[in-house]
Amino acid sequence: MAVPVTQVGILRALLQIERNLTGLQRDMRNNAQTWRTAALAQSTPIVTLASNMNSAATAYQTRLGWLPTIQATPEWSRIAALYVTMGGTGQEFADMMTPLSAVADQLGPVAKTTYAEIIAACDQIIAAINAPLSLWPE
Image 1 (tube, one colour):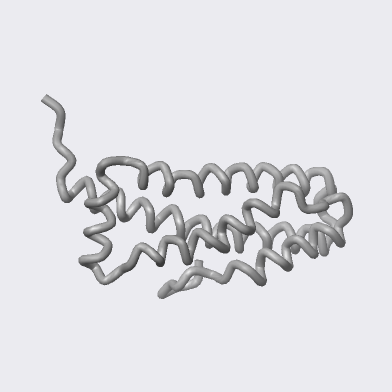
Image 2 (cartoon, helix red, strand yellow; image 1 turned 180 degrees about the vertical axis):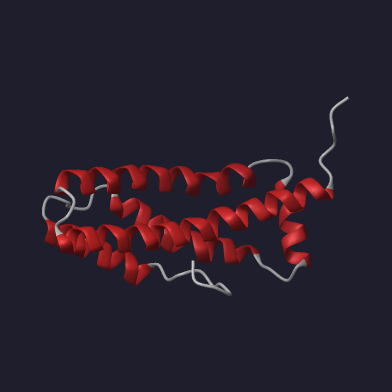
């Protein structure tokens, strides 16, 4: 006998969505700040920074794919209903996903052959992705 999907499981999935999206937002911004600092100091070889940025772009795409994957499951209607009960709307997922997806889509192909190009790419990310709302610095 399989364990049924209960409201506990639905809540768990909703909390995972929150952790993924806010974590991705935080990671994108923090990574851009780190890469920018390294590029300004020219303390890390350009090829290493570019490789790190390309790897991050791939990881960002993977993480962004998790929401559409869960939205395609039969449990999505229950997850969405719980979110609405909490006062949320489905539009909020799109509101978060749109800028995150734009940055992830642009990061891979953006030019990263000079420190100036890396700094410019990081500046664009930092301008597009604000820090998630938090009670303390993260």
